[in-house]
Length: 233
Image (tube, rainbow, N blue to C red; front, side):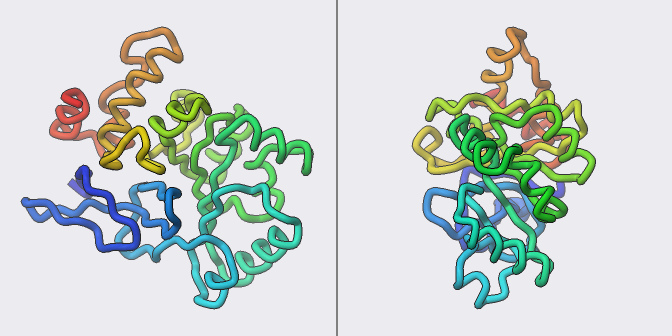
């Protein structure tokens, strides 16, 4: 396997190693209660919140917990990212309130705002509960992946991300965790089990999302061992 998920969660630490020598590979976000745990390459830099420290360190992977930031900060982000080739991991359309604020301020969705600002290419979208079909089509066109946080967004009443619509549109979907209130071990396999139930309820159809698709979202490939662990959660 190219990657195997364990129930261990790392933030700013080396990826944990399993007994069989395989690695759990995740994105590491150095911000308390904001880690996404998205699968990524070991060579990727740690993702830092966008601020003066990140700019001083020349960080190439930036994290935005929200796009509802002051205009001056947004302008600085755009300038820094474009000049330094930095990539953005942004929480987008995670709540109805956030999507509404961005629409009120800019007259467009968060994803469309990223696109207009020149930040969408190389971006990773986190949350995405209120992504619409135009957002998903643009993300697919620009090869922008989506990281969903089933337990976090369901637990806090945000809703359920349109995962099946995203997959049909051609968007790559991965699983992540957030603050751990509803998933204390920060287990991506637990998130897969939650998403299996949530999508079934969302579409009123049992196994609306296949176990194979869940395995790919959790571990990067369809794997029988991962599927067994998801079913046994």
